[in-house]
Figure 1 (cartoon, rainbow, N blue to C red):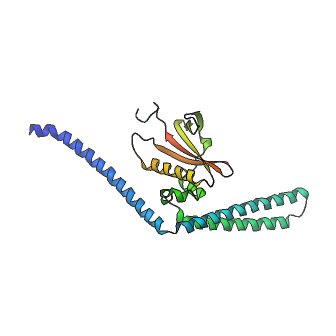
Figure 2 (cartoon, rainbow, N blue to C red):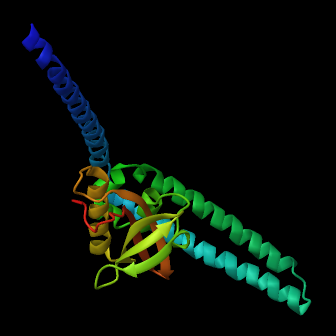
Length: 233
């Protein structure tokens, strides 16, 4: 009995640790089950047709947006010259209605592609970068929220930064429009960092995108900063 009383606290502690580990594995299995179901639904879709429809609607949306800008500019010119603006305003209203219609068509086209399954297929997501960025980005975060410090690598893609008084690490990658291989690699890296939870893997905090110039975006990953320079410390 004395021996059992000595061993009992240690056995209880081991049992508690084993139950906690079991709960963690069950949680991971549930996440995998949900992802498999999502991927099965994804594979059942005609993905190529959906992506083509999204790209066509996105093109139409950009065209109508440019027409709206030109029509509004024409109204402004008429006002400056003292000319009658009735016809120009009528054209502007038509352009705005067409743009609104194009926006609705785009939203309807992207709806089947939205959701976590998007990032499970980086090659597909890379073909619709605007959609992928909208699905992946953390809302309300931009580069303006950071005070960027020194660069930590030779190419300048990894840098120290500070946001809301907290020191973090930013990793960036240029994402030219149409460069599907680069976007695909970025998606895969992001997916792995989101899935991994390990003491020796840097913790992913935030994802956001910045448009550097027309057709070129930068993808940013905010990672936990380790004071001593490595995850092992």
